Image 1 (cartoon, rainbow, N blue to C red):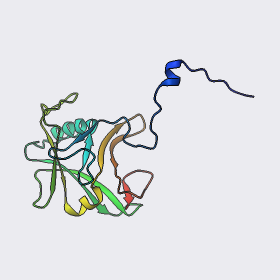
Image 2 (tube, rainbow, N blue to C red):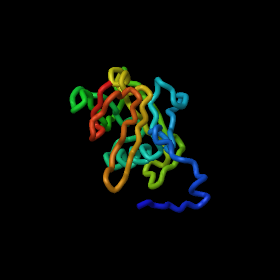
Image 3 (cartoon, one colour):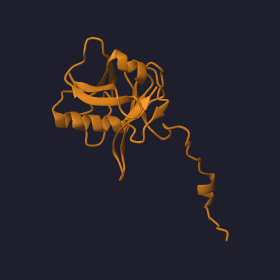
Length: 162
């Protein structure tokens, strides 16, 4: 038995999604003073910016002083685990990335104020070139680390090896 699929001309001629590129279709935000897709930078998506702003407001973290700390810890099924938490200020040797100044997002409690990501020097060795995204589907809700330094990751996506 054979099956026939009917397509409209628009469906047939529409560009095919790039399944090999995990960043396809995402709006990437580059930190102030950084060049897009730089290997020595960290980027976020617009959906991550929105969720960071909402969570910071809910936790009472001031965008002027505090920010989101992104890092790596040993452990997990693949050897290294991502860590993410709020911090009231950067540490002395942190790399600080500033995103979204003047860019409004839906339900923005910050009034388009920038958010800051703090990354310690040791974690930055593994996170350079990474994109932080926020995914919200029926099956899952949470931050995704799209990390070019990851050689293997577990099924849950919270641990990796480099």
